[in-house]
Picture 1 (cartoon, rainbow, N blue to C red):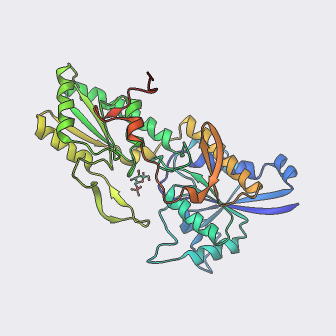
Picture 2: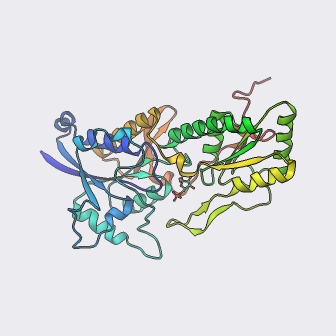
Picture 3: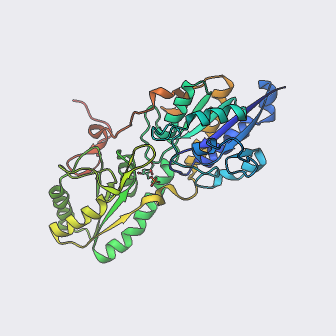
Length: 371
Ligand code: F6P
């Protein structure tokens, strides 16, 4: 029987859903019954810590498992229950113009004898995969990011688990907020998009939701808060995306500089807003930054299922030789699209469709009634 070797890696920020995807890639690739149908016996090599797992110099020992870790059914059997990524991850960019190491990556892919490489990641990781595809590597992508900001797919792994974290944490805040009659500003992640804040805010019933796609007026936020108090509420929850900003301001950054892919490290709007509210209306206001909690914990049922479907679909693409594609979920179906349709683009919240700019909240109308 013909032999084949598949490499798999996870890149960028970790999240829940990665391990289920890895498990199902392995299980599908080495499935004995499928093997006889396909006429190919596959083995799967896990590549450690994102692209850096392919950046070892000649002479490095692969026995240590620091770079490469062979995967089999037994090894991955329980992985789908765990958050994060058992393979490790990093924001390493082999094409970083200041230190381009892509040649090393290409050499190592060749030396390892990989017939195909599955990259699980967001825009950055998939962008590297696409560049490698241009150099002749057989790549397939699986979308993951809690930000849900990739185009061409209605789902990215990690998003629903992050939603559950937001909902649970806000539920916890409600009792303390109510006891003290305080306002709580909860800062979510999401980079330049508001999916996490908007859908998380809808799920947990936040009073005000502020997203990067719609700059807000601090005066208006304060008016809405006073309105709430007048109607008899004891407390208010505001969800603010890390990339949201008041009209006339720049995005807030928690740290100077940029990461390996040139991204600013956003954060700080929550604290700023809490201060503005206290100074504006004199109501005690606290800020909670959910930060990496949103990426943590065991995958929810949906991320386990989607990880499974995406993992299986990625192996299917390899079987049919459809390389340079990303598996995706569209209109209720798992399908795929060319990777270059995804790279460098961002899925933003359509404010007109999904946001109520009068109340700074989720929409109140699902279907527009005609006539
Ligand atoms: O892209 C995922 C994400 O969690 C963003 O929402 C956030 O801005 C960023 O990663 C944080 O990155 P890091 O883990 O490097 O601090």
